[in-house]
Image (cartoon, rainbow, N blue to C red; front, side, top):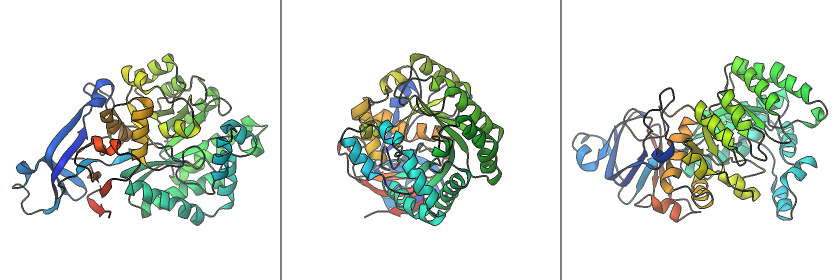
Length: 418
Protein backbone atom coordinates (compact mmCIF):
# COMPACT_ATOMS: atom_id res chain seq x y z
CA UNK A 1 0.00 0.00 0.00
CA UNK A 2 1.34 3.42 -0.99
CA UNK A 3 -0.01 6.91 -0.30
CA UNK A 4 1.13 9.95 -2.27
CA UNK A 5 0.07 12.78 0.04
CA UNK A 6 0.23 16.55 0.47
CA UNK A 7 0.17 16.96 -3.30
CA UNK A 8 -0.05 20.70 -3.87
CA UNK A 9 -2.13 20.25 -7.04
CA UNK A 10 -3.66 16.99 -8.22
CA UNK A 11 -5.11 17.18 -11.74
CA UNK A 12 -7.22 14.68 -13.64
CA UNK A 13 -9.28 15.07 -16.83
CA UNK A 14 -12.95 14.17 -16.80
CA UNK A 15 -14.65 12.19 -19.55
CA UNK A 16 -17.51 13.65 -21.57
CA UNK A 17 -21.01 12.55 -20.77
CA UNK A 18 -23.09 10.74 -23.38
CA UNK A 19 -20.24 8.98 -25.20
CA UNK A 20 -22.09 5.66 -25.45
CA UNK A 21 -20.34 3.02 -27.49
CA UNK A 22 -16.88 4.43 -26.82
CA UNK A 23 -14.29 4.13 -24.10
CA UNK A 24 -13.93 7.27 -21.92
CA UNK A 25 -12.83 10.39 -23.80
CA UNK A 26 -13.46 14.13 -23.73
CA UNK A 27 -14.61 16.34 -26.59
CA UNK A 28 -15.70 19.93 -27.12
CA UNK A 29 -15.93 22.04 -23.97
CA UNK A 30 -15.33 18.94 -21.84
CA UNK A 31 -11.70 18.91 -22.98
CA UNK A 32 -11.20 21.96 -20.78
CA UNK A 33 -12.73 20.37 -17.68
CA UNK A 34 -10.14 19.24 -15.16
CA UNK A 35 -10.79 18.06 -11.63
CA UNK A 36 -8.39 19.99 -9.40
CA UNK A 37 -7.65 18.83 -5.84
CA UNK A 38 -5.43 21.00 -3.64
CA UNK A 39 -3.48 19.23 -0.89
CA UNK A 40 -4.43 16.02 -2.69
CA UNK A 41 -3.65 12.38 -2.07
CA UNK A 42 -3.69 9.14 -4.05
CA UNK A 43 -3.74 5.68 -2.50
CA UNK A 44 -2.22 2.84 -4.52
CA UNK A 45 -2.40 -0.89 -3.93
CA UNK A 46 -0.43 -3.14 -6.25
CA UNK A 47 -0.73 -1.67 -9.75
CA UNK A 48 -3.98 0.21 -9.18
CA UNK A 49 -5.34 3.43 -7.75
CA UNK A 50 -7.77 2.64 -4.94
CA UNK A 51 -8.63 6.10 -3.56
CA UNK A 52 -8.30 9.76 -4.55
CA UNK A 53 -9.09 12.79 -2.43
CA UNK A 54 -7.61 15.34 -0.10
CA UNK A 55 -4.77 14.44 2.22
CA UNK A 56 -7.00 15.22 5.18
CA UNK A 57 -9.59 12.71 3.91
CA UNK A 58 -7.17 9.87 3.21
CA UNK A 59 -4.48 10.14 5.87
CA UNK A 60 -6.43 8.23 8.53
CA UNK A 61 -7.95 5.63 6.19
CA UNK A 62 -4.46 4.73 4.96
CA UNK A 63 -2.50 5.33 8.15
CA UNK A 64 -0.45 2.14 7.67
CA UNK A 65 0.54 2.85 4.05
CA UNK A 66 4.03 3.80 2.94
CA UNK A 67 3.91 7.56 2.41
CA UNK A 68 5.53 9.91 -0.09
CA UNK A 69 5.31 13.62 0.66
CA UNK A 70 4.54 15.57 -2.53
CA UNK A 71 4.45 19.05 -1.01
CA UNK A 72 5.08 21.75 -3.59
CA UNK A 73 4.42 19.33 -6.45
CA UNK A 74 1.80 18.78 -9.17
CA UNK A 75 0.45 15.34 -10.06
CA UNK A 76 -0.95 14.39 -13.48
CA UNK A 77 -1.81 11.08 -15.12
CA UNK A 78 1.21 9.72 -16.98
CA UNK A 79 1.46 11.12 -20.51
CA UNK A 80 0.22 8.82 -23.27
CA UNK A 81 2.20 9.37 -26.49
CA UNK A 82 -0.18 7.82 -29.00
CA UNK A 83 1.82 8.32 -32.23
CA UNK A 84 5.56 7.66 -32.54
CA UNK A 85 8.15 6.11 -34.81
CA UNK A 86 10.56 5.86 -31.89
CA UNK A 87 12.11 2.51 -32.98
CA UNK A 88 14.47 2.82 -35.95
CA UNK A 89 18.13 2.77 -36.98
CA UNK A 90 20.47 5.37 -38.42
CA UNK A 91 20.63 9.16 -38.21
CA UNK A 92 19.19 11.88 -40.46
CA UNK A 93 20.71 15.03 -38.96
CA UNK A 94 22.11 15.86 -42.40
CA UNK A 95 18.56 16.10 -43.77
CA UNK A 96 17.64 18.50 -41.00
CA UNK A 97 20.50 20.72 -42.14
CA UNK A 98 19.34 20.40 -45.77
CA UNK A 99 15.83 21.57 -44.90
CA UNK A 100 17.26 24.60 -43.15
CA UNK A 101 18.97 25.41 -46.47
CA UNK A 102 15.59 25.31 -48.26
CA UNK A 103 15.28 21.72 -49.50
CA UNK A 104 11.74 20.39 -48.99
CA UNK A 105 10.81 17.12 -47.29
CA UNK A 106 9.41 15.76 -50.56
CA UNK A 107 12.55 16.75 -52.49
CA UNK A 108 14.69 14.93 -49.94
CA UNK A 109 12.45 11.85 -50.24
CA UNK A 110 12.55 11.87 -54.05
CA UNK A 111 16.37 12.05 -53.90
CA UNK A 112 16.50 8.84 -51.84
CA UNK A 113 16.42 10.41 -48.41
CA UNK A 114 13.61 10.57 -45.90
CA UNK A 115 11.94 7.29 -45.07
CA UNK A 116 14.12 5.48 -47.60
CA UNK A 117 17.30 6.57 -45.83
CA UNK A 118 16.11 5.11 -42.54
CA UNK A 119 14.89 2.03 -44.44
CA UNK A 120 18.44 1.32 -45.62
CA UNK A 121 19.77 1.70 -42.06
CA UNK A 122 17.09 -0.62 -40.66
CA UNK A 123 17.69 -3.28 -43.29
CA UNK A 124 21.41 -3.30 -42.50
CA UNK A 125 21.02 -3.24 -38.70
CA UNK A 126 20.63 -6.24 -36.43
CA UNK A 127 17.72 -6.58 -34.03
CA UNK A 128 20.08 -5.80 -31.15
CA UNK A 129 21.36 -2.64 -32.86
CA UNK A 130 17.82 -1.37 -33.42
CA UNK A 131 16.90 -2.05 -29.79
CA UNK A 132 19.97 -0.19 -28.53
CA UNK A 133 19.29 2.79 -30.82
CA UNK A 134 15.74 3.11 -29.51
CA UNK A 135 16.39 2.30 -25.86
CA UNK A 136 17.71 5.74 -24.79
CA UNK A 137 14.77 7.45 -26.53
CA UNK A 138 12.28 5.26 -24.67
CA UNK A 139 14.09 5.90 -21.39
CA UNK A 140 14.17 9.64 -22.06
CA UNK A 141 10.43 9.68 -22.84
CA UNK A 142 9.81 8.00 -19.49
CA UNK A 143 12.00 10.54 -17.66
CA UNK A 144 9.85 13.26 -19.26
CA UNK A 145 6.68 11.70 -17.84
CA UNK A 146 5.45 9.39 -20.60
CA UNK A 147 4.20 6.07 -19.30
CA UNK A 148 2.63 4.65 -22.49
CA UNK A 149 4.09 4.91 -26.01
CA UNK A 150 2.57 3.80 -29.29
CA UNK A 151 5.44 2.61 -31.52
CA UNK A 152 5.21 1.94 -35.25
CA UNK A 153 7.23 -0.14 -37.66
CA UNK A 154 7.43 1.32 -41.17
CA UNK A 155 11.15 1.79 -41.75
CA UNK A 156 11.87 -1.69 -43.10
CA UNK A 157 9.45 -1.90 -46.05
CA UNK A 158 10.12 -5.59 -46.60
CA UNK A 159 8.79 -8.49 -44.61
CA UNK A 160 11.94 -9.41 -42.69
CA UNK A 161 12.78 -5.83 -41.74
CA UNK A 162 9.25 -4.93 -40.69
CA UNK A 163 9.16 -8.00 -38.46
CA UNK A 164 12.54 -7.01 -37.04
CA UNK A 165 11.22 -3.58 -36.04
CA UNK A 166 8.15 -5.07 -34.40
CA UNK A 167 10.34 -7.56 -32.54
CA UNK A 168 12.45 -4.65 -31.29
CA UNK A 169 9.30 -2.94 -30.01
CA UNK A 170 8.36 -6.15 -28.21
CA UNK A 171 11.81 -6.37 -26.57
CA UNK A 172 11.65 -2.75 -25.39
CA UNK A 173 8.15 -3.24 -24.02
CA UNK A 174 9.43 -6.14 -21.95
CA UNK A 175 12.66 -4.49 -20.79
CA UNK A 176 11.81 -0.82 -20.26
CA UNK A 177 9.39 0.90 -17.89
CA UNK A 178 6.86 2.41 -20.32
CA UNK A 179 4.22 0.29 -22.01
CA UNK A 180 4.90 0.13 -25.76
CA UNK A 181 1.86 -0.39 -27.99
CA UNK A 182 2.91 -1.93 -31.36
CA UNK A 183 1.57 -0.74 -34.72
CA UNK A 184 2.37 -2.27 -38.11
CA UNK A 185 3.10 0.48 -40.67
CA UNK A 186 4.42 -1.41 -43.66
CA UNK A 187 2.37 1.06 -45.72
CA UNK A 188 4.64 3.96 -44.77
CA UNK A 189 6.08 4.44 -48.27
CA UNK A 190 6.85 2.47 -51.42
CA UNK A 191 10.35 0.92 -51.26
CA UNK A 192 12.65 1.54 -54.24
CA UNK A 193 12.31 -2.03 -55.52
CA UNK A 194 8.58 -1.35 -56.00
CA UNK A 195 8.92 2.22 -57.27
CA UNK A 196 7.28 1.23 -60.56
CA UNK A 197 5.03 -1.50 -59.19
CA UNK A 198 2.70 0.01 -56.61
CA UNK A 199 0.22 -2.83 -56.95
CA UNK A 200 2.98 -5.36 -56.35
CA UNK A 201 3.86 -3.75 -53.01
CA UNK A 202 0.21 -3.51 -51.94
CA UNK A 203 -0.11 -7.24 -52.66
CA UNK A 204 3.03 -7.92 -50.62
CA UNK A 205 1.52 -6.02 -47.70
CA UNK A 206 -1.84 -7.79 -47.94
CA UNK A 207 -0.75 -11.30 -48.87
CA UNK A 208 2.51 -11.69 -46.93
CA UNK A 209 3.38 -8.99 -44.40
CA UNK A 210 0.05 -8.59 -42.61
CA UNK A 211 -0.61 -12.34 -42.28
CA UNK A 212 2.89 -12.94 -40.91
CA UNK A 213 2.70 -10.03 -38.45
CA UNK A 214 -0.63 -11.41 -37.24
CA UNK A 215 0.65 -14.99 -37.07
CA UNK A 216 3.46 -13.87 -34.76
CA UNK A 217 1.16 -11.58 -32.74
CA UNK A 218 3.47 -8.61 -33.16
CA UNK A 219 1.03 -5.73 -33.73
CA UNK A 220 -2.21 -4.45 -32.27
CA UNK A 221 -2.83 -1.89 -35.02
CA UNK A 222 -2.40 -1.57 -38.78
CA UNK A 223 -1.56 1.94 -40.00
CA UNK A 224 -1.19 3.48 -43.46
CA UNK A 225 0.22 6.78 -44.75
CA UNK A 226 -2.67 8.08 -46.85
CA UNK A 227 -1.54 11.26 -48.55
CA UNK A 228 -0.36 12.92 -51.71
CA UNK A 229 2.63 11.00 -53.07
CA UNK A 230 2.09 8.05 -50.74
CA UNK A 231 -0.85 5.60 -50.53
CA UNK A 232 -4.13 6.44 -52.20
CA UNK A 233 -7.45 6.19 -50.40
CA UNK A 234 -8.33 3.07 -52.43
CA UNK A 235 -5.01 1.37 -51.63
CA UNK A 236 -5.30 2.35 -47.98
CA UNK A 237 -8.79 0.90 -47.60
CA UNK A 238 -7.61 -2.43 -48.97
CA UNK A 239 -4.62 -2.50 -46.63
CA UNK A 240 -6.51 -1.69 -43.43
CA UNK A 241 -9.26 -4.13 -44.46
CA UNK A 242 -6.61 -6.85 -44.64
CA UNK A 243 -5.36 -5.80 -41.23
CA UNK A 244 -8.88 -6.03 -39.83
CA UNK A 245 -9.28 -9.53 -41.27
CA UNK A 246 -6.21 -10.51 -39.25
CA UNK A 247 -7.37 -8.88 -36.01
CA UNK A 248 -5.57 -5.52 -36.24
CA UNK A 249 -7.46 -2.29 -35.59
CA UNK A 250 -6.95 0.63 -37.98
CA UNK A 251 -4.98 3.84 -37.58
CA UNK A 252 -4.37 6.34 -40.41
CA UNK A 253 -1.77 9.00 -41.24
CA UNK A 254 -4.33 11.35 -42.81
CA UNK A 255 -4.30 14.56 -44.86
CA UNK A 256 -0.94 15.86 -43.67
CA UNK A 257 0.42 17.16 -46.97
CA UNK A 258 -2.83 17.60 -48.90
CA UNK A 259 -6.56 17.03 -48.52
CA UNK A 260 -6.99 13.62 -50.16
CA UNK A 261 -10.12 12.72 -48.14
CA UNK A 262 -8.09 10.45 -45.87
CA UNK A 263 -10.02 11.65 -42.82
CA UNK A 264 -13.29 10.53 -44.39
CA UNK A 265 -11.68 7.21 -45.29
CA UNK A 266 -10.56 6.80 -41.67
CA UNK A 267 -14.19 7.24 -40.65
CA UNK A 268 -15.40 4.66 -43.17
CA UNK A 269 -12.97 2.00 -41.96
CA UNK A 270 -13.76 2.83 -38.31
CA UNK A 271 -10.18 3.72 -37.49
CA UNK A 272 -9.47 4.31 -33.82
CA UNK A 273 -7.44 7.40 -34.70
CA UNK A 274 -6.65 9.60 -37.69
CA UNK A 275 -3.41 11.52 -37.25
CA UNK A 276 -1.71 14.72 -38.53
CA UNK A 277 -4.80 16.31 -40.22
CA UNK A 278 -3.08 19.56 -41.21
CA UNK A 279 -5.21 19.75 -44.37
CA UNK A 280 -8.45 18.18 -43.12
CA UNK A 281 -11.68 19.30 -44.82
CA UNK A 282 -14.98 20.20 -43.18
CA UNK A 283 -16.41 16.95 -44.56
CA UNK A 284 -13.54 15.01 -43.02
CA UNK A 285 -14.25 16.62 -39.66
CA UNK A 286 -17.94 15.77 -39.86
CA UNK A 287 -17.28 12.19 -40.94
CA UNK A 288 -14.77 11.58 -38.16
CA UNK A 289 -17.12 13.00 -35.56
CA UNK A 290 -19.97 10.78 -36.78
CA UNK A 291 -17.74 7.68 -36.67
CA UNK A 292 -16.16 8.49 -33.29
CA UNK A 293 -12.59 8.67 -34.64
CA UNK A 294 -10.01 10.35 -32.38
CA UNK A 295 -8.09 13.21 -34.03
CA UNK A 296 -4.44 12.88 -33.04
CA UNK A 297 -2.50 16.09 -33.65
CA UNK A 298 1.29 16.29 -33.88
CA UNK A 299 2.33 19.92 -33.48
CA UNK A 300 6.01 19.05 -33.17
CA UNK A 301 6.08 17.82 -36.77
CA UNK A 302 4.45 20.99 -38.12
CA UNK A 303 6.94 23.03 -36.09
CA UNK A 304 9.89 20.93 -37.25
CA UNK A 305 8.88 21.16 -40.93
CA UNK A 306 7.71 24.78 -40.74
CA UNK A 307 4.23 23.78 -41.92
CA UNK A 308 0.87 25.26 -40.88
CA UNK A 309 -0.41 23.69 -37.68
CA UNK A 310 -3.45 21.44 -37.67
CA UNK A 311 -6.67 23.41 -37.03
CA UNK A 312 -7.10 22.37 -33.42
CA UNK A 313 -9.61 25.07 -32.50
CA UNK A 314 -11.83 24.18 -35.46
CA UNK A 315 -11.71 20.48 -34.53
CA UNK A 316 -12.49 21.11 -30.84
CA UNK A 317 -15.34 23.48 -31.67
CA UNK A 318 -16.75 20.82 -34.02
CA UNK A 319 -16.81 18.37 -31.12
CA UNK A 320 -13.97 16.06 -32.15
CA UNK A 321 -11.94 14.50 -29.32
CA UNK A 322 -8.31 15.63 -29.74
CA UNK A 323 -5.23 13.68 -28.69
CA UNK A 324 -1.68 15.03 -28.75
CA UNK A 325 1.45 13.01 -29.53
CA UNK A 326 5.10 13.67 -30.33
CA UNK A 327 5.44 11.80 -33.67
CA UNK A 328 9.00 11.16 -32.46
CA UNK A 329 10.91 9.99 -35.55
CA UNK A 330 14.34 10.39 -37.14
CA UNK A 331 13.30 12.67 -39.99
CA UNK A 332 10.47 15.05 -39.14
CA UNK A 333 10.46 15.44 -35.35
CA UNK A 334 13.38 14.08 -33.39
CA UNK A 335 11.78 14.77 -30.02
CA UNK A 336 10.38 12.36 -27.43
CA UNK A 337 9.38 15.10 -24.95
CA UNK A 338 5.61 15.35 -24.45
CA UNK A 339 6.06 18.55 -22.43
CA UNK A 340 7.38 20.29 -25.55
CA UNK A 341 4.42 18.87 -27.50
CA UNK A 342 1.95 20.42 -25.06
CA UNK A 343 3.72 23.78 -25.21
CA UNK A 344 3.57 23.77 -29.02
CA UNK A 345 -0.10 22.79 -28.93
CA UNK A 346 -0.88 25.79 -26.75
CA UNK A 347 1.36 28.34 -28.45
CA UNK A 348 1.04 27.09 -32.05
CA UNK A 349 -2.49 25.67 -32.17
CA UNK A 350 -4.10 27.93 -29.53
CA UNK A 351 -5.22 25.09 -27.31
CA UNK A 352 -5.70 25.90 -23.64
CA UNK A 353 -3.47 24.30 -21.02
CA UNK A 354 -6.43 22.30 -19.76
CA UNK A 355 -7.27 21.01 -23.26
CA UNK A 356 -3.64 20.05 -23.85
CA UNK A 357 -3.50 18.08 -20.60
CA UNK A 358 -6.69 16.22 -21.49
CA UNK A 359 -5.39 15.55 -25.01
CA UNK A 360 -2.11 14.09 -23.76
CA UNK A 361 -3.59 11.87 -21.07
CA UNK A 362 -7.24 10.77 -21.31
CA UNK A 363 -7.65 11.28 -25.06
CA UNK A 364 -4.22 9.83 -25.81
CA UNK A 365 -5.33 6.75 -23.91
CA UNK A 366 -8.60 6.70 -25.88
CA UNK A 367 -6.59 6.86 -29.12
CA UNK A 368 -5.01 3.56 -28.02
CA UNK A 369 -8.23 1.97 -26.73
CA UNK A 370 -6.87 2.10 -23.17
CA UNK A 371 -8.81 4.91 -21.51
CA UNK A 372 -10.64 2.42 -19.31
CA UNK A 373 -7.27 1.69 -17.63
CA UNK A 374 -5.09 4.80 -17.99
CA UNK A 375 -5.40 8.54 -18.61
CA UNK A 376 -7.31 9.59 -15.48
CA UNK A 377 -6.58 9.56 -11.75
CA UNK A 378 -9.63 7.72 -10.43
CA UNK A 379 -10.08 4.54 -8.39
CA UNK A 380 -9.76 1.40 -10.48
CA UNK A 381 -7.34 2.89 -13.01
CA UNK A 382 -3.73 1.75 -13.36
CA UNK A 383 -1.39 3.78 -11.16
CA UNK A 384 0.41 5.51 -14.07
CA UNK A 385 1.26 8.94 -12.67
CA UNK A 386 3.71 11.79 -13.23
CA UNK A 387 4.90 14.18 -10.51
CA UNK A 388 6.23 17.63 -11.46
CA UNK A 389 8.43 19.90 -9.34
CA UNK A 390 6.08 22.88 -9.69
CA UNK A 391 3.22 23.57 -7.23
CA UNK A 392 0.59 24.29 -9.90
CA UNK A 393 -0.11 22.93 -13.34
CA UNK A 394 0.15 26.10 -15.52
CA UNK A 395 3.84 26.27 -14.60
CA UNK A 396 4.45 23.02 -16.49
CA UNK A 397 3.92 24.85 -19.80
CA UNK A 398 4.75 28.38 -18.65
CA UNK A 399 8.33 27.26 -17.96
CA UNK A 400 8.68 25.19 -21.11
CA UNK A 401 11.69 23.49 -22.63
CA UNK A 402 12.99 22.05 -19.34
CA UNK A 403 12.16 18.78 -17.65
CA UNK A 404 10.22 19.38 -14.45
CA UNK A 405 9.40 15.70 -13.84
CA UNK A 406 10.77 14.49 -10.51
CA UNK A 407 8.90 11.20 -10.16
CA UNK A 408 7.02 8.73 -12.34
CA UNK A 409 4.78 5.96 -11.01
CA UNK A 410 4.28 3.12 -13.49
CA UNK A 411 1.68 0.53 -12.48
CA UNK A 412 2.39 1.28 -8.83
CA UNK A 413 6.20 1.22 -9.11
CA UNK A 414 7.82 4.51 -8.10
CA UNK A 415 10.81 5.88 -10.01
CA UNK A 416 12.35 9.10 -8.65
CA UNK A 417 14.65 11.37 -10.65
CA UNK A 418 17.22 13.71 -9.18
